[in-house]
Image (cartoon, rainbow, N blue to C red; front, side):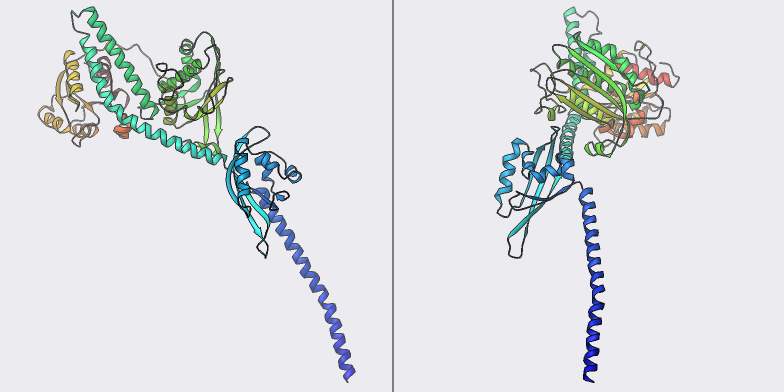
Length: 544
């Protein structure tokens, strides 16, 4: 009985042992499969993530693992790092190497967090943020270092772009505000000088002096206009145009701008490149870049202007936040001049920054280019090499519309009329001068210093007023646009001509549809004023 029980128990134990073996085999297989899956997932992660992951011994004399991203960022093979663990430090930029060596050795546990530059074999410089963390055993001893290295070059470029844009915006706001006061002052000077020169029996010296005053004022007005262009607050009169036509039409003038020692080459795209832009502003861009290139080639050289098109992706729009992805037309202006030194390059678009001698430049040329391009929703890229030349690439949003042609008739000689004009201007010197110009040309003038005074005059003379000539921004809480709206509600046939020392963007975006012949940017000449009035009445079929 007892033997039977023992025998049975032995059999059970034997059977139990036999039954346990396949269970252990299955567990081992599951563990191995899980390990293989984990390794595969880690491999997928390491090969996909853009950061470099690495594992070394505490002294970094042996590399246990480095992810494939090392090859993409460092431009060197992972095998070279396994064979020579110190080669990562050899790739660090010489100016940063000692700082990196000190940072990696300063912490007793091997940890650090540092940014530095590396120099790739193709001589490309990349910025790296490198972090190291210690891995300790159960006794608290550091057994390994693990870390990650990230390429932060693009991030730093975006930061610099943001700082630059903020700085440009601040200066632009200042320029736009100050321009109003300058324009009012210049308007009074130009109008008075042009008005005085028409007087009879003026001595030749006096007439020449007045002409010089007018010319100097015009130069000052152009300077203010460049400030407004730079600050993206100049009134735009855009149309659909072919970038190729812009270059062709300006080629002869550019040849006169550059010296005979500079060869002008045009390489135009075979198909039309349509964009919506202000043609005068694009002319300004080309002229400024040509002058800049000419000055960089005092001994002569080659100025190359090329047009083309390009699809802009998300990568470039991250560097240029104001640009939208999609098809762009491209204007490239390159020279074989002296190039731009590395320390100067970050400042080239800053207003009043110039490397020219005093009196040889205002420092607004490239700042104006920057402002115009940004105002058109585009962006600029610059590449340069000292003593080899500079290349500016300007990208503007493409359009599928057809190019518009603009007639360019000979402007008729300005003439006056007998209509009644309600003149509303808060600057007394400008108002008095405008009144004198209008009366000299036979207009009847009613004048007011603000909107409230204009409303009182309107109440008494509404039947006789033919045109409202009003400043846009005035004291008293009633703008020129609001005044025009009220008066036109009372008389839908009333003609309106706006004027302002501000740009339309500062004065109010609502007048965009009324620009052109219905808007005068101060300062303007008597001829421009009379021509604008004549055009308004001509367009409505009335005679002056």
